[in-house]
Length: 94
Image (cartoon, rainbow, N blue to C red):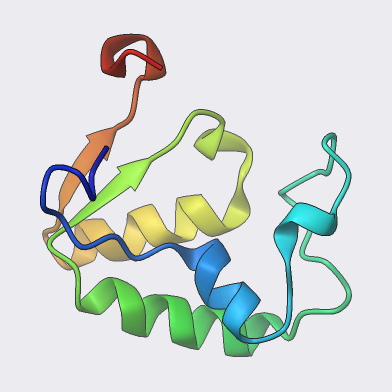
């Protein structure tokens, strides 16, 4: 929807895939408050913050409250005065 609206989307999961980690390989019930052993969290944090610094807004997806990374990204977004959008699928027609 964002791309269709003309926005450039930066997706941390897509960045992970470029660097060899595919989050879709984890079980559906994966606890996203735990960093997978195959990731170097410091490298992930650096590249995510770098990507976020180039953005105008952050979109929080359902369940973001359970994600350590999403909460950290929200804190950085607030520090950078980015617009914060809470995505609600029921309002988007999903």
